Length: 289
Image (cartoon, rainbow, N blue to C red; front, side, top):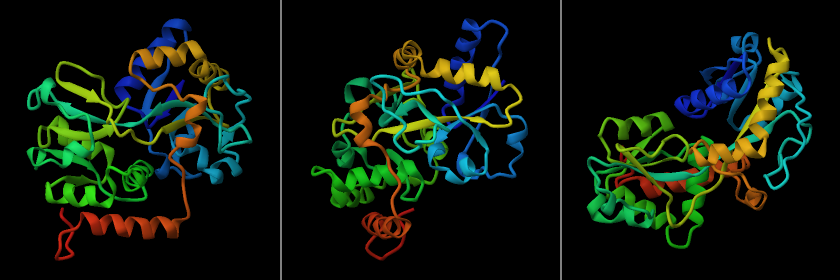
């Protein structure tokens, strides 16, 4: 069975291996997925069984074309219900927030920041990287959160600009900035990193939006029964707890539903991002990157 996912591939592979242990004879092969690059003509529909990614539940074009099979999975008590997809084509299986991630070799544990506001302090000048403003859901939601937070706002972005923050267009680029040592501190997605001897993870005191990854089944899945069994397994409360305990996911609780990273009107997004870019640009109007 093939699982195409936007979550960390190393974590997804471990999760797939755990499923294989509990269901002898069923092997899950993991592949990377960026659902924004997927259309009805994509070759993945010939081989994929299960798909997981941010924004999957909002792809009404794919659901309308018959690309997804109905899950009939129901709602797991206590977990955030499928707030967007009322037709049952997807279910939320993973949750995440942006965290402060640091390279232990460059930032000792005792000195590691645990606050977004703190990152604007001069001692972090030239050391921090995070997503550039864009319509990418993670970036857009991050900047909405920052702009609305009373202790941050656009003034904080101006301080980060003066602090020479490194802006990158994709989460993969942000991660590479840390892994390569170019920037020892990043704002990265919880669940993309496992706390190890090399890397530490701290949730910002100010908080961040909740991001949910939705999972769907390919209506032309080569292994439909195995796909349904896998999705049902992911939604099992015991498996959800296992993912939390092993840093695969946060628990998407029902009382978190109002904190989701939601889509908005494109023109409103453009106007908002223009203001964000202005706060991050130098006085001469040139992009700080």
